[in-house]
Length: 402
Length: 85
Image (tube, rainbow over all chains, first blue to last red; front, top):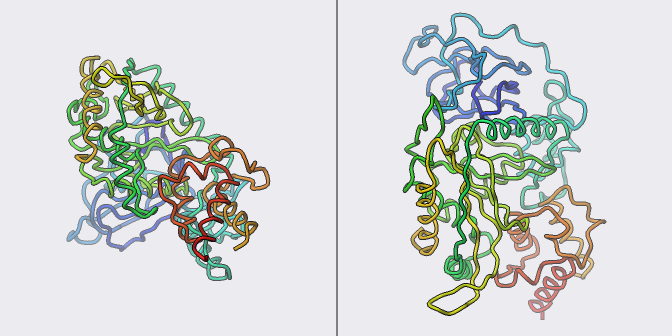
């Protein structure tokens, strides 16, 4: 059971997407797991052949529990690789990213499979794949009867419902409200993570007001040449600038573990996304600094839609190396946030506002934004934090180079 | 397309973007941002849906003209009328 955030201690196996004998490629989605915050598609971090399933749908197991045995490619059947470690009983290490399929254990790491998971009261349970498919096909989940364990709505239920429908699907995919029971558990998970952050991380905050006029003018020119579906949001410029600025202060890009920061050679910016009905997730945009603005926009849009449709992938929750949160749409001018452990930094943005600004001795109106940095004082000092914000400002003055 | 039909379509698309919205409670002259929990991405998705379903491509410079339901309906009606004229 992979750890998908520092606040996760256990997960419930919802469904297997691969069966014994199936070939698995690194990155393939092999299973679906329910956590307190979301239903997640679990990817394999290794290639091979699925030898044996150890955890059955409906079972809730601690983080670290082997879910299945994966045989290395080319190895004879029945001769999988090294034995697995026993399931973790303690808070797992935050890094490196966990393998979704653990090596084989001498004996099953969990008890016998449950007959069938009980159906929770309230809204229908839906697998992540089915939820995304429903969004894609415009199927109202409230109209679908699930055929899975405990009445869970599965992919085939959505396809059947779509086939039986007469009216064409609406566009774009609808977002999905978070069920009340999931909201309560998500709140508890956020509470645990933020309490840990406040308790363990000696935060310091820095803020800088950045003139965004040039970036916005560049964006207006760019978007004027594009159809609405291809336009960029200014948030994409901010994300790209953060990803590049953190290269200048690499100690802010990583996780805290074993008494020191472990910088990550790759920049995977986590984006705080509010969910319908409350709560939030902060999945990663992988290799953020290497993406073009168009590609970043496409992935950002996809990530937001999937986060709100409940179909994130395990690597997206496990991999963020620094998080960005923006509350500008809500009218907030400055964000002084809490770091999401085990990360060591969080960047916040407020709303863009018009302010008098002195340029070459003249007071002129400018569109400005307050960028803030919450950093772990065990890792960096204020000087390095200010280098980050200064670099961020400089990058945003040359938007065409982002 | 009549104004009522445009209004119905706009409400339907808004509810697709933000399913928690009760169209009956939307105040037609109050800014979307002040009464709905929508962000920049939601608004962009709404505009994409308007383009896709009502075939009105709204330039970014006109976004400020679509801040309320009534503004939005009037804007789309104007553009549909201009196109059919």
